[in-house]
Length: 384
Image (tube, rainbow, N blue to C red; front, side, top):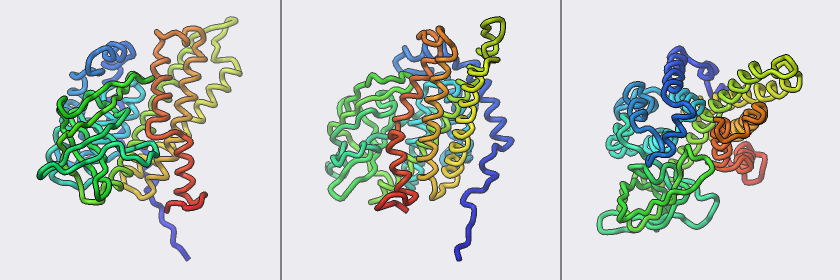
C-alpha cells in the first residue's frame, strides 16, 4: 500500500499578506510609471526600456533580488514573491528584461550550484546593475549543437550561434549552453564586440527584444559541475515557463478589466453594451479561462518556489493553459472594443503582440502537450 502525501502545501497556493502588499505597491508603481504611452516611448530608445525605472524597481522595491538568497545580496524570499512581481509586470506590459535577467539567468546560476559564479554575479543582478540572459538553452529539437566550446590555453572559447536570444543585443552577461568534446556544459560569457556579434531580430512583440548572437572565439568560464548542465538548463526552462505563465495571467487580467470597463461605458440602443446577453457570455468565457489560468499558474509557482520534482508537469500545464487564456483574452480585448480596438493607437494591440509572442517563447502549446503526455506516462518511453 502506497502512502500519499500532498506534494505542495495547499496554503502555498494562496497569497500571503506580504505578497498582497507587494502586489498593491507594484500596481501603483506601474500605473504611475509604465502606462501604454510610456511603453511606446521607451520602445523607440536604444535599450528598449527606461533604465532609470529599472534601477528604481531594483533599488526602491527590490524586485530583482526577491528570489535571490541573502548570502548573494538578495532579499531571501522565494519564486512565489517573484511571481507576484511578474504578474504585475505582465499586467502593465513592462518592457524591461525581467524575464531573461531575474528569472532565467539568475535561476540558472542558482541551479548550477556554483558558489563562486553566484557570488560574482547575483549581487549585481539583485541591485539592478547587471543585465543577463541565456543562450543555447532550447535548440528547438535540433540534434546539431548551436554553440560549441573549445579549449584555448587554460580556458575556453565559444564558437557558433544562438538565435532569438532574449535581450541578446543588450545583456551584459550571457549564460551559454555549449557542446564540448565530453558533452554539453554551461558557460558564462562577458562578451565583447570583437568576439561576439549581436544582431537584433525583428520580432512581433517589440516589448520583448531578441537577437542573434554569433560567437567568434568569445572567452568563457565554465559554470557548475561537470555533466550538470542539462539538469540546470531543464530546471531553468521550467522555471521560465512558470514565470511566463505568471506574466500571462497578469496580462489576461488587464485585458478582462479593460473590456469590462469599456462595455460598461459604451452605449448602444440606449443601454450599455455590457448588458447584452451575447457580450455577457463572451466575458464569462474569458473569466472562466482566467480562473483556470490562475490555478495552473499558482501551482507552477508553488512548485518552482519549493523546487518540487513536479515542476516539469506543472510548468507544461501552466504553459498550455495560460497561453491559450492570454490569446483568448487579448482577442476579445480587440473585438469587444469595436472599431477602436482595431486601430494601432489602442493599447490592445500591444497586448495581442505580447500574447502571440509569449505562446511560442519556450515551445509551442503542442510541444508542451507532447512533453506533458510523456511526463505523466501517456506515451511510450515516458519520463518519470
